[in-house]
Amino acid sequence: MGIIDTHAHLYCEDFSTDLPDVITRAVNASVDKIFLPNIDETSINQMLSLCAEYPGLFYPMIGLHPTDLATDYKEVLDRMEQLLEQENDFIGVGEVGLDYYWDKTFYKEQQEAFERQINWSLKYGLPLMIHTRSAHKELIDILKPYKSKGVRGVFHCFGGSEAEAKELLTFEGFMLGINGIITFKKSPIPEILRKTVPLYRLVTETDAPYLAPTPMRGKRNESAYITYTITKLSEIYGLSVGQITEQTRKNAMTIFSKATE
Image (tube, rainbow, N blue to C red):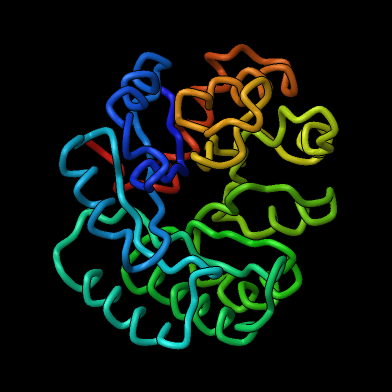
């Protein structure tokens, strides 16, 4: 049974010189599905071209990343929604969310854009791929009214506290996205997972080219490296690599039901 990388940006410039090799290494590592969250309007065509070239391996999403908002974000979202209204292969709405780590210039605008894209998720029956950084309270406040409306998706790159994990898990239609962070020497996430998060609420991801796991930390991340995350999950939950792969694959396909061959 193959591994699913539920979050990678292999269409970006970091892979422009050796993408075929990156894909070969992923396939050789038993990765057979790679989900591609969009970043902004400029990344859409490259992402869709990659999906067309490798059908059955790559699956696209569409959304506006919170750190890529500009003053014309409403018009950008209008054009993105036009693509959703047409026949398309998008399996989710993402990468969307809130990020106040570096800059709060678009504090209110990020929330307005996020809420609009939550409504896309409900309108078009697609799961959300949610990015949040230094914005947990705002995330919860925005999502709460949608809790009973069938909203679902992934809280990408979980790196919060035990209390935050418990709060996120109250959103029953969501999984936590787990990546190479859990392999970092001082990461508290393994213990939080062990104590708080059942395996059936996790999906695996890389966030390539970012957040390469130990022992690749500091290098460009790629989908093949997801095996380090799975091995660590095997240690955390006391299960075989095969059991981890099987359960996280089932979890991913439960959320991203359109990601079929």
